Length: 262
Picture 1 (cartoon, rainbow, N blue to C red):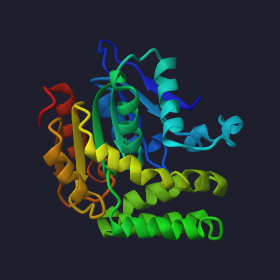
Picture 2: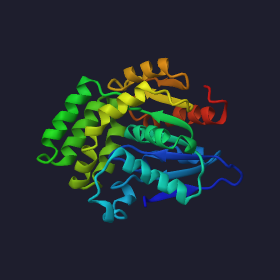
Picture 3: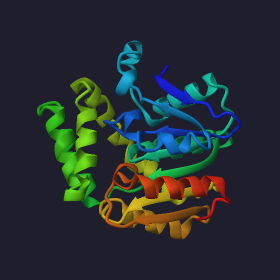
Picture 4: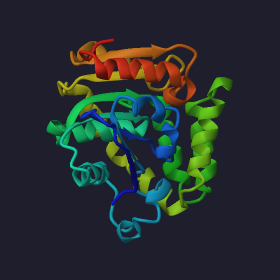
């Protein structure tokens, strides 16, 4: 089972589950914990091969990684904690996992908050992935990861986010990076399906205005999906919860605590 941490509120019954992206860990939510645990029960988890889940999953390292397999890891954790339903907050690739969980287990998802959401790969993203496929077994994975991080988060004000994710990625093994990278073979058909299907679960997208690779597709999705809303964060890149934590926390807590409107 994944490594995870819970914070129990004295009176609240609702849960918020945080799902990080590829190469990160639950530590990327350090600017959210204090505020969210004032209002909710909080669950932080490390995806397989990441953070403190790296050593606990040696027995499944040979299993093929798919989005369904990794999503089921998350379901195992909420089952273990007896959480019938939760709000889910994700960043980057974590948003794909949350959306997949909502598709497979809609009764377990109260709402979704998608930070730096990935719902379509534009031409530049697809070229990056093809380069990664070519070089993933040749070039040290950290070089590739640093390159990807710079392309996704290129500006000076994105430096903290880049540094945080690269620091966390150093804890991965090359073999683990390759297992996760192989998921890209699934990603296009999965995202195409997600874009076409409005799942009718309240969804808040929180996107940096400088998230050039992914923001345009999210604008289009929100215009088509009635259950979705979008907040665009000024002077901010891909990792909105790190770059603008106070704004992120205020908007998300207001959304979860209200009538799913902002």
